[in-house]
Length: 189
Image (cartoon, rainbow, N blue to C red; front, side, top):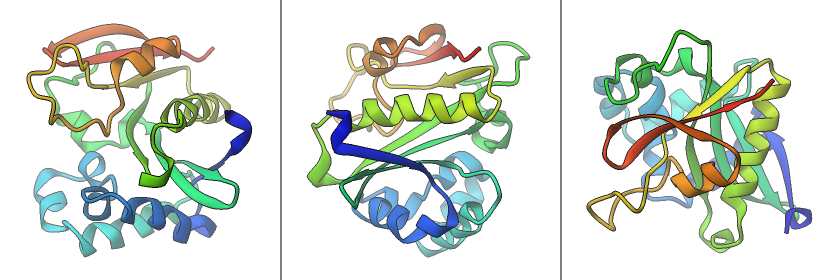
């Protein structure tokens, strides 16, 4: 399965491909991962074009904000991964408050374009995100997936990934402050 896909850091030279992935997702086209980075008022005010412009400046920074997956030469999926400290939402969140004082990296968002869903791409993006974070000095990775068995509604969004996907990749649950949203971790070193 993995040989059908290739993966690259989300750099400025791949902006058109990143945008193709976001534009194939109703909320992704308006959010652009600003939900995690910006204060809530700024995120809501930028919904749509404002967040798109903000994201373009994020991708232009030296550290890529995620991983981009391709099938052959077509952009297929996205995974957001960066040091936890850059995410305003995580700094303010009680449910996702730090478990300890370790400098962790966070995986916060997956988007897979419709033609590439149900092919295991999210799991492959997760594997690549772990490798990317490790190669860039992360000692520990953290995520905030959805526990599908504990969620009250089948309509819950799965952008943060599923708990089973993270557990299968070797992450362990370290906290649970919301019934369906655990905090999971993986040691990188």
